Image (cartoon, rainbow, N blue to C red; front, side, top):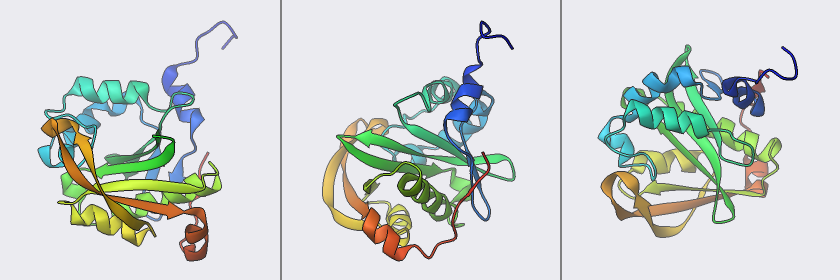
Length: 198
């Protein structure tokens, strides 16, 4: 490749964030080839109604747009959560109103298996060790106790309730708000460290 040749955007985005491995999962940058798998998983209304930004219906073009804008310099840090090379969900760290906020979702067939907790642990470790954040924020709809339990198991502490716009329902809904400070994470850090592949 010469300096005049364009670097493929997938390659650039993949190089912008490290691959994270947990006991059962590999978390990596999304690729355009993942669009069909992402759109099939995110098409379920229950996922859209429990996230702020996923529309319903969720189409292939929505997945392609999501992937095309992921991991741009200065933007949101986006991971696909995979198990045995199959996409099971996604997670991210984004700046929201001047604070670092994590988000995550899993395909319905992957609920209740501990994957979300495992992925959030890895994302939190990465945010505090590699990205140097002092605190992380997160939210869960008050009607989603499973997501609340994920955050609590990862050390997040409840800070109150707020109203957030939910794209799929075209309305606002009450959200439990959570925060995890670096000091609390450090004190609780008995978790197995993440392994960086790249």
